[in-house]
Image (cartoon, rainbow, N blue to C red; front, top):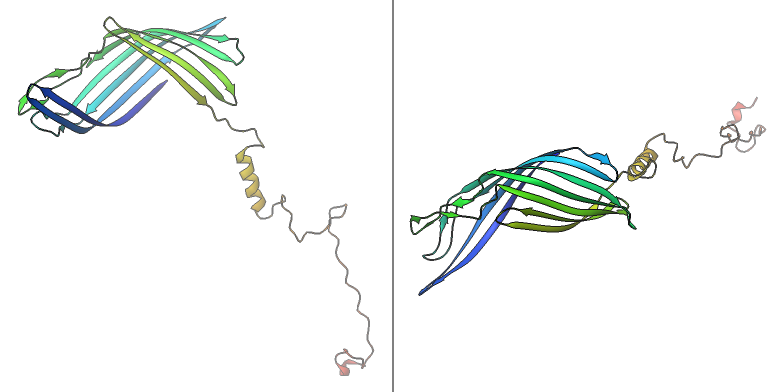
Length: 252
């Protein structure tokens, strides 16, 4: 499994500066772009009553912040454009089991180890009044344990509901993330009952020479499949000189 994600964020900030006899408010608007590339390999082994799946994954995240200047008084900052690049590798094991409930349910648990390298401490160098200084954000742990657990219940008709819990633990911080989601899968209808079949039948009815829609001028068919012809009554001979006879000189 592999994929890529690109997002753009429009950020607006406002901060108030207050100390002693000084007071100021600064605001800014800028754009942040994030690019994420990821991939994973895994292989599931069916071991009753559990299915075990060892996995290994890699992800690269690149975040770029545009340069901007705050609007305000003497406390307004100017920041240059900055980019952080961080790569993560993860190895671990997942376990799956089918649980007997009123709805078909699959439960899972996962444990792994994540290693981060690259720009693990975001930093920038803003300026104020022409003077620059350095700032740093919260560092990303280079090594952390990743945990996960949850279940997915099938609702029928290609729909399922899932509840998940994930956690990232290191020696300085812990991050927890519960979530719930609804998944709906759209499958192609059976042959002869889907929308595609309906459209084909409608086009076939409009096609010239189609047999699905008989012509209004078609009459009854005989048992052999032939349409009977209407016979015209024979004309009666008229004597010479009678009205309607043409002309008189044609008579003998």
